[in-house]
Length: 156
Length: 277
Image (cartoon, rainbow over all chains, first blue to last red; front, side, top):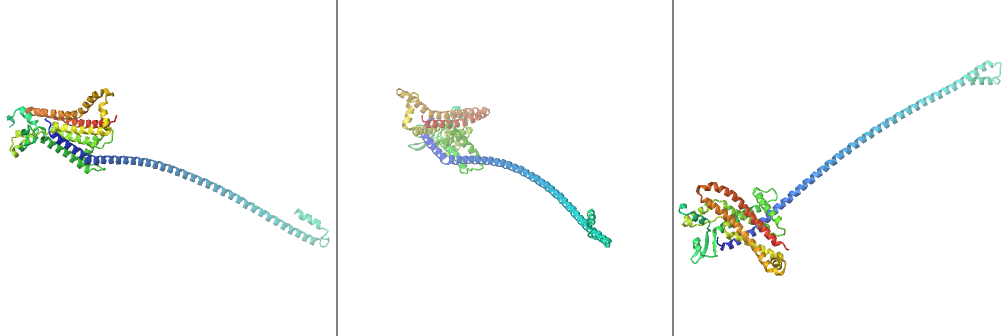
């Protein structure tokens, strides 16, 4: 229990141990711990970020899908409308064309009839005149009886 | 052999260090060193403490050399738990920047723990082994071979640790506060008046000097008492069997606690030394 030179030996040993620990043991171990802590923190942060990114991407995808659907619906709607308009227009044009063709036909028929009528009238007039001429050649002057012929022609 | 000696002789044998000194006739041991005075060496204390210190440094150095920042091995994980435990305590109590404090605390904690741990080796095993080596190797009477295996039950060792801490307290007090600041701290507290300088100085000196001595005596006292009780239990014959185990279990607490207290107080004292008022 007496104090002796052991004290000095222990002091030296203590100093050497602390020095060695400070130089070769503590720094590499603490550096490894701190480096790993940083790595873990970085990893956690990265995973957080990735999660957020994923959520964002999903959100964006959903939105785009919705937009695309809406666009498609709109396009279909437009196409339907356009088709309806086209059908309407074509129907109308068909109608109009038919009317026109019918009207033309009528007009042509009318014109033909008029022409035929005129022709007929003329031929009848000429026939009547010829007939009358032949009848009257002997007795009356064709000139004097012309107004009667005209009256007949007009009645036709 | 054991029946030839009395209980008090047995206890005394267990509590005596193996001593070495140099006399006029050359190197002498044990009883020949009775009047060697200061220049005697407790070779058992020195050997066990330095051996355990080297064991500590070797174990931790092997972890440090292979330290990876990736997935640590089992040994590295264990070492890192201790490192982190010490580092947390240092960071909680010490608010300065000093690269010495944490390694110092680690060294104290693990080294003192390992030395205390020797207390759990049954008290007769190593002294008996040493006696056999002395008897068969050197032809000595086994009763003349002393072997005290718990270095922390030697006041020389605990006082050396405490004085090492005390020197650091003085060094950092002067370094941080300057010589004037440290003198002022010793003389102008707690009563800030010139007339109180002697009173202050006495009070503060006692406070300052009490630190290393309380550190040394606390560790020494606890472990010495623990060791003594182990030895007393060992003298009870068959009764030691039921008694030894509970005391050993209880002593595990003392071992860790004393190592922790020594480390904690070292940190706190050095933290106080760094505080500039």
